[in-house]
Structure formats: structure tokens, C-alpha cells
Image 1 (cartoon, helix red, strand yellow):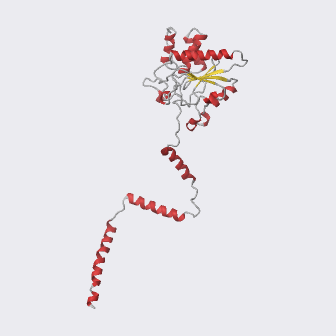
Image 2 (cartoon, rainbow, N blue to C red):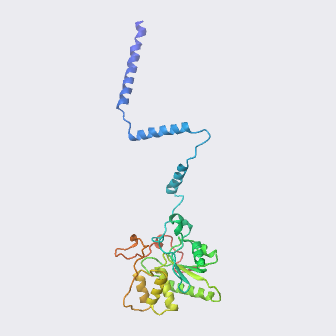
Image 3 (cartoon, rainbow, N blue to C red):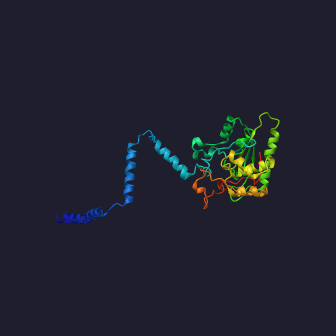
Length: 304
């Protein structure tokens, strides 16, 4: 009997430290934040699995929407294009000057997510707006230095001629070759329209339809009708307020036509120009949005 009983204390001696060690470890161990998070996540997963019906997952519209947003931001499936600085509040167009309509650049539907519905201004909306005013557009002259705003096919597919005269929007006024191309295209178009009872109009735009657009129209007026830069500047300012608002553009016009004004008056910066668009002197910067996108295919002119 003694021999048979002797192993029993040995088994107790073997199990005893295990029980003590286990209990001691359990008392000393404190869950870290990561472990708590993992445990709670695993508990939620198990609970969801228990609650899950056998015929498939329950619809979760909110989760689907969040996944879509996550895919857009991380997966890069969709890129929201931003409008040019100041474009949203810039007036769409001015009044015609010798059948030339000054306008800001129309933006295609790829910009729609960054434009409130009431402020969208696409090629279709341009056409509809001008037709309501009794004007049909037959020629569009694009002075921007990029091709990212719209495809020329938006105009050509509806029978409107599109001419690209790429002009830098920063640190320079349009070059003389670009001015000559502009004046030629407008004169040639007007000549073709003479036999028509209802001659069509020319739509001219840069980014905002003021500085480069005004510069070209003043040159056109000086070469076809007027003899004073001041008078031409005033006409443009009346039809497309506030007119050309960059001093270097105005000075370049006076210099080109060898005029010395008593003083050069530059209109104030438009209200729709954000404070971030002003330089250290409080003056409007050159339109810089054109220089941040895809460059235009040619520096001066491309006709379609």
C-alpha cells in the first residue's frame, strides 16, 4: 500500500507549481491598449458572425458609401478637379464689343464636383445663354495656356470653329505674334459673316476674361476703329467691368502704340479675387492657374 500511495504526492508536487505559476501570471498580467483593442475587435467579429443570417450579408448603405469614399481617396479611382482661383465668383461674360463677347473659360463636366450647380458654366451653358440673348456663337478663341479646361471638340462637334492662341498667364503679356493671330482671326471671321442676315459672334476667353482677353480686344479696337488706348481701355471696362486690372498690361498697350498718358489708372482688384491671390503690394497676381496644368499644344495658334 505504501508503494502504491507514494506516487500521489509526486503528482501533486508536479501540478502544484503549475497552478501557482498560472495564477501568479494571471494576477501580474495587465492587458495593453493594443491587446484590449484586438480582444474587443475579435469579440465584435464573433458577435457579428453569430448574428449574421445564413442567406448573406445584411445591406449597410452607410458602409458602402464610406468604402466608396475610401476608394476614391486611397485607391485613386477618381480625382476631383479644382476650378481656377477666383473662377467661381467671377462674372461669366461681358457685353459684346463689335460682336466680340469677353468671357471667362467654360469648364467641362469633369469639374462639376467642385462647382455648385448654380455656378456651372460649360460650353453648352454658354451657347444657351447667348442664344437667349439673341446671339449665336460662330467662333471661339481660347487664350489660356493649358488644355485641361475642356476639349475643343465640345465646340467643333456643334459646328463652332475653335482657335487656340496660347498665352502665358504669368509674368508676361501676350506676344505680338499672338496679337496678330487674334486680330487676323476676328477680321477674317467678320468678313465671312458679312453676307449673313444674322451674323454670328466671337467668344473670347482667357481664364477670367479680363486681362489677356481685354489686352487682345483693345489691340483689335486700336487696329480697326479707335485712335486712343485710353478710349479703348474705357470701352472694354464698360463692357467687362472692371476691365484690365493689371498695370503691366495697361503699360504695355500704351508703350506699343507710342502713347504717353498723363497718368495710368489701374482699376481696383475685383472682389471675387481672393486675398490669397494678391501679392505683397496688395495687387492682383498674374493668373497662375494656366501654368499649373497641362500645357497647350502650341504656343501661338492652332485652328480647328
